[in-house]
Image 1 (cartoon, rainbow, N blue to C red):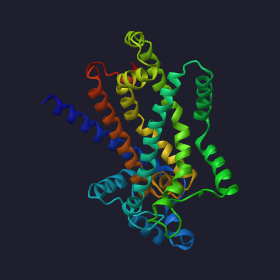
Image 2: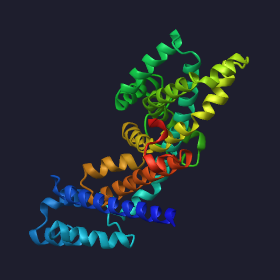
Image 3: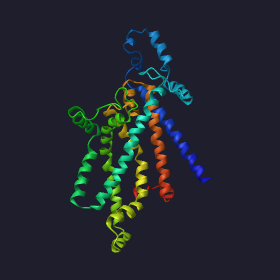
Image 4: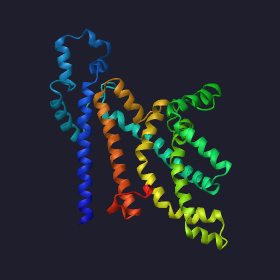
Length: 328
């Protein structure tokens, strides 16, 4: 019964957050400068009469006070109708649907690789604490973390796409190669490299510090006294004990990696939700922008709920204290 009440509480919080997000976004999008009719009709809007303009606004749901426009949009959205994309002149849902998979593939691969490599790097640094290798990795990792991803992406494009012609600079695949897995992987390399390098050290550093805290505990000294090798101690015993911390970090990092995915899509013109959000804002495509941001909001809020749930599973003390494993 207690778990059910907690579930209802989180569900209510999720719904309230989505309603508030949709209202705020709808209101401020309508206040942004620019005429959305220009996106839909192009230059033809300049030759339209006042009656034609008013008729077009009614047809596209752009007439009346903003709060009435929102009520109308919300009623249609609850029925699965998110309106017509002003730029693409087709249902907004039909525009977004084919691109969700691209974002999930790019973001999912980056997410997995970041934490696999971050854990491996953290173990290597912990095994070589205070050596030249550890200090160099710490400094290089910190510098890489603070490099703007878009700048780093441009540098990679200049080197590997323009100068060396080794890798494509944009898109998800070449023309006519949609079903070619190798071609798709080729287009993923540069965005993945940017995402991994911009996120890797942030998580590796946290895992490294947790491992070092674990290495200094009494049971490690006892294991060393018994002749157990340092690599075995760190890779088996210490890593197992910091596993709740790693799970906690992975859970709360989803929004961080998702934002990095959007940036990578914009830099490499990779067709996904992130690139679509930039285009919808640029062309005042209200309906498309609403849908894209709502999808993003759902992913971020759900990831927060999942993170909290996982933290409570791996560390039951969180139910009382509300402090996650990585904060201890």
